[in-house]
Image (cartoon, rainbow, N blue to C red; front, side, top):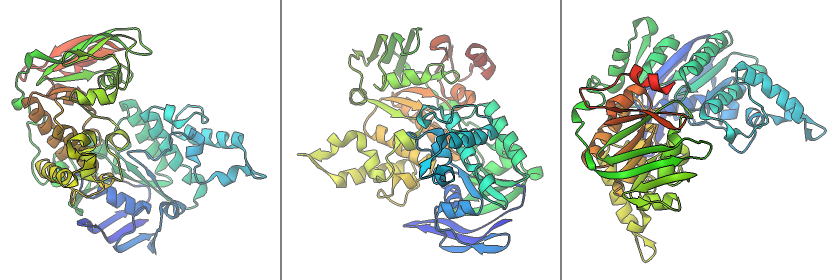
Length: 501
């Protein structure tokens, strides 16, 4: 029903798509995998109409089509659920769901909000999300916003007569196992009317849901694997072009931390909305991982150390200096760096170049008499692009156009180049492919070797166990258990779960 033939796409200095061929049959779920920078996001944007191809053809039911923008693609039944989300946070849920299609609810020049709310409830029911459609979108959790994204795309069912093609770009990255299974159930039910392209770095999910898997590397489709013939190791090898390191979390590189040098100390800190005091110490060279379910208090601890949240009681000290007035500016001045979970919103500034993003937190070091020394900024960026193997055509590249893994490297370079010796890593590998994750794990070990104290909120329990010197299990804001994680004496996920729930 849908086909790409020899599709090409170029950007200045980058050949993003090289003669890509792809076909989607009715009722099929097609997996799309590849390392960050392999071309997956560019391909999805070509399909969705956000980018126009420089060569090749797009065909629907054998007929050539061309889309000047995403709205034209949607009118042909092509919708996209974005990894980084496209919802407008200060609009209500129902306004987001019907954004651009409000005319159907207009009566005598006025929007019938009751009719819109009723229609929104019908869409939310499709994704089993029971919320008030009149609430402001910013008040929802990330997982809830992801389901609103899907509900928004499913409005195509009522607007388009033909078959649908729905693109799922990392839709499960922050969903719980129960929410993932609900999503998969919804996808399977919808294959009577729609076909799907499923992009994910979670190989087990790709193999569970997809009928066929397209593997991309360096802008090309290097193989198409049927589900019956697929296994994780085969696909990973094709993606990376080499065998994945069996020493995945670099445990052999784990060295003892300095127990006499405390970089951060929380002493009976009580956070807003909680009545339980939290105490912890982060040492130089230590990877201290906070483990717990959503709402366990991990985010509050991270944001308090970064100066974005003030405890109601107790104290926070950085390098022995007790914090009175909390601010990110003060924390940064004390050597704290923060890699946030939502990197596109809080980690980078899209529209600014790689070199501008890298020096954003340390402009004082690159200014003389109030005038920026731009040549020095660019030299720093070129050095870190080379050091971290960042895939960008130059230091001038728009950071918003880089792949997720390369954006994450820019954020890490921003803090490391500024000399931060306390790093707060909140889901630093979320949405990254295997190769990019390995790069991040190497950086974690490098920072630990340099005496940097790392407070980690990991993406998985296995990641927490593999990377950490110490694990604190949190429940309802309270430290329920501490685990020392020597390389040959790591706890199991079941050990952690016992105290998490």
